[in-house]
Length: 267
Image (tube, rainbow, N blue to C red; front, side):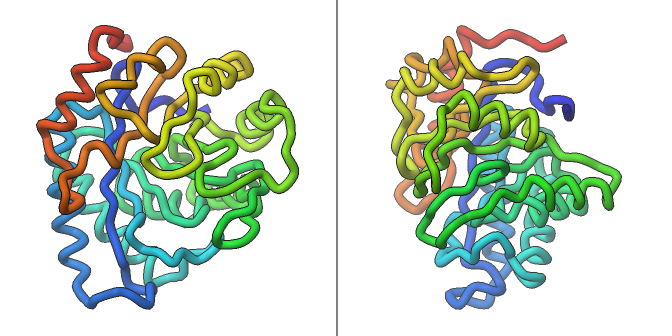
């Protein structure tokens, strides 16, 4: 398994939502605007006490399925590289929808350290159609690069449903043991909506040794305390933003302060 890039538990990862990007029909022609937003978000996240920042093309819909294309990959590499240069916290890449190998290539080229993959070892039905597992393609890309990012993989990912429902224990085990995930992400049904504490506790029971469990949606200062006992980390996007979709350091600090009592330093 790849070494965890974060320095304490539980860790807080902020999300910078960017897009539309080159290659998307809605792209407006200014890549620099996306660069500036991502850098500003990352700096605010670091100032507020986040342990990492992940750059995601959330505003890039409609998303392609499983393959981003050269224009989008190149644009993301430029953006992520500027974010890496702007902050000292670990930087990650999430390339929608389910473009894990491309996300790894971007991370390697830009100096990022982790990625998020929606369907690593589980077929799901989404608004992009059927997302097929990309574990093999990701492993092949890592072999070519001779480098591996820290891989955070969803199970029963939001905005989708399993193609063939299976016991959670089996899905988590195959995501880690056969798929190669370093961390398992549990979400609610959609962006901004949390899973239940019971769902997170159940996932924890089935987590293989050395893997992390991360809550990936719907977290805010008033509910995060219900998840701290079971989660190694939290990915937070929606709550951190103002009405214009920009991350605010003071909002990062509020949610960071909510998890600090349980933080322990990693030696």
